[in-house]
Amino acid sequence: MQLRHSFGSAASAYAEHRPDYAQAAARWVFATAPGARVLDLGAGTGKLTAALLAAGADVTAVEPDPAMLAELRRTLPQVNALSGSAESIPLPDASVDAVIAGNALHWFDMAVAGPEIARVLTPGGVLAGLWNVLDDSVGWVAGLARVAGAEVVGPRDTPAAWRAATHGLLGPAAERAEFAHGQRRTADSLVATLATRAGLLVLPEPERTATLDRIRDFLAAQPETADGEFTLPMLTCGWRARWA
Image 1 (cartoon, one colour):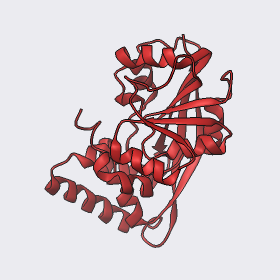
Image 2 (tube, rainbow, N blue to C red):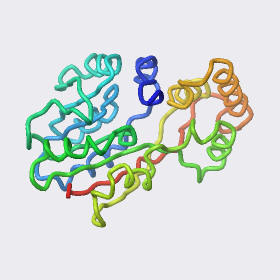
Image 3 (cartoon, rainbow, N blue to C red):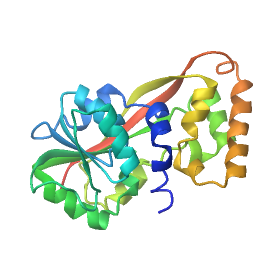
């Protein structure tokens, strides 16, 4: 629970440093929905909201953290952004064609959120999740993962966790896809990005500082990241399924 509520303290840094989502992935998650009305659930500062808008969706965003919601409203004033949660969605019955969560599904209490999601979806509506992962098939990224620890750079919305979180409600027809993605970073901005991970936000300050220093030293020693800008290799991964 502490991890779930850790982001508000870093809302502005989250908005500045966290990556967006691959545009192809944003189009894919609601391509099979019966319409274009999409709920971005656990929307944070609007990273996925912006990608869904660019993909042509009619987006409503719901976010429980006041600081994150304020940042979303500041950057995307045209969006209907509401205070609420997956367990208490402030929308009428059958009002959206797809419910999509970006790096958020693992925070939901699906025993409560499942019926709420089913309530707001239209018949044949789609439930989907997207999450960004570092592409550790690249050598220096794998080294970074070893130095920083899985809690800092590893995905939280893994396929296994995604299925477990939905209590098997998606069934065998759920589809998975991956989309190449990347983010332009410097060593300093990558450290700032990793500092917004929940696992680091809740660390005691001495341990947090030591971890960030270790990451900074590693990046300074790699030819790919020591000087100037570089592209951080990433994947946007996703699951989608018609709600059972």
